[in-house]
Amino acid sequence: MVLKTFGWSFAVTALGLVAAVFYGGWTGFGIVAILSILEISLSFDNAVVNAGILKKMNAFWQKIFLTVGVLIAVFGMRLVFPVVIVAISAKIGPIDAVDLALNDKDHYQELVTDAHPAIAAFGGMFLLMIFLDFIFEDRDIKWLAWLERPLAKLGKVDMLSVCIALVVLLATAMTFATHAHQHGGAHVDKAETVLLSGIAGLITYMIVGGLSGYFEDKLEEDEEREHEEEEEAARSGKPRSAVALAGKAAFFMFLYLEVLDASFSFDGVIGAFAVTNDIVLMALGLGIGAMYVRSLTVYLVRQGTLDDYVYLEHGAHYAIGALAVILMITIQYQIHEVITGLVGVVLIAWSFWSSVRRNKRLAEAEGKAAGSDEKTEVSSGV
Image (cartoon, rainbow, N blue to C red):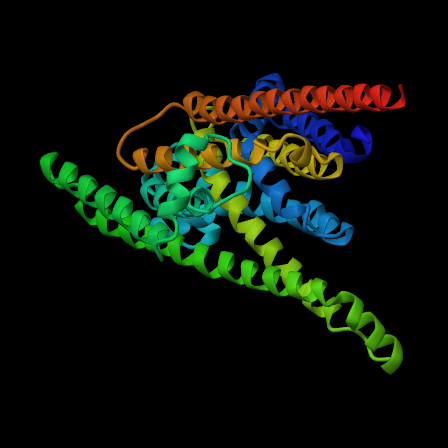
């Protein structure tokens, strides 16, 4: 099971490390290994959230996620995206941006760092909306009940998530502008960029997430009528509409997954510059990490881990909220990547430990109930 799920990840790791040795020697090997570990540690919460969505898809779409999705994640976000960002921010052509990345690495790093506020605002707002919509929803299973119960009641207020997200964005942009004024006004114009990028992230979430949720709801409605439609299709000989609907639902959920992965990858791409400014080594290291995140997502789905450890999804969403806040803070202040990674790991580890304790309590309760039933049967027999 492990080899089947992680086979491609192992193969890509071997190829990536060999390519790193040929390209940059043993120094390149070490850099790629470090970047791979960095990406996996930063994106473990991504895998848990992805698994919650992917488990609703069939085997075909899971395979698409591992093939086409990987191409988008590895080549799109880890290789093409930094070049596109430089091309847009520096107002140069894509070919010039690639030339810059390969031949003037220091200037290339400066341009990517310069574009960080816009990237962080977009990704931060997208992830913040995911977190807010999660904590404001009333759920049967609650992890931190003392916090989640009152938040679920607040969640009944229409558009509360959007209002809070916009307040956070406005406060961030105003703080950034005020700080720029106090330090000579060099980045005053970027406050507007932060505001526009954040709004773009919010709009992206609402469009992609809204379409995904719409088709998912339609699919659930269709499944409720499944038996009736099967009988009708058998009598008329016409194909059922559920197949097409499932395709639409899966497509938009797949699209949602890709945008989600893109938002998660922002901190990894920016953080990678703390290790190297060589775009080839960066793509190799982050690409290997992205493969493991993909494989881990599928593994969690096939093992039913989210069903067995019910608080894992909660922990991952709290990690998303923490990452969103960190991204918004990094617009103005620098936060070390180790802190970003540790916050997510600690929250997920805590939720896993809570799930294990819950399962243990339930098992003990069932054992006591079974023992009580046996005693009742014995006394009745006597």
